Length: 83
Image (tube, rainbow, N blue to C red; front, top):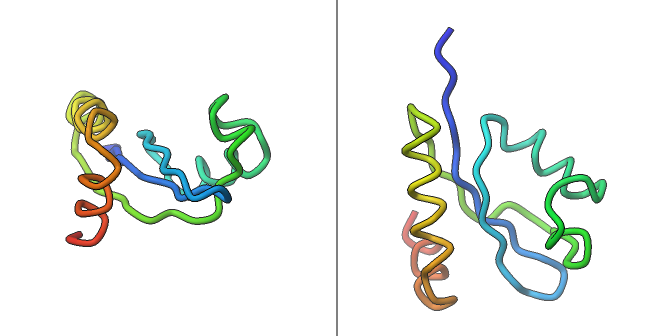
């Protein structure tokens, strides 16, 4: 079975955005909620998934995550609003 990868953006309780990649968005979101995800989301509690995009390879997902992490907040919000 072929595994797909996803880039996702979370909105946090203090209205910041966190971007990551995974092969299971719901499972990863649960980890973030439990404080086991990323260091950033331990202190900035995630509220909801606001964006996700599917990729067929891990490499593609990582490249997109890198690109998104370098966008401004305004650009990230535009990406979220135009999905």
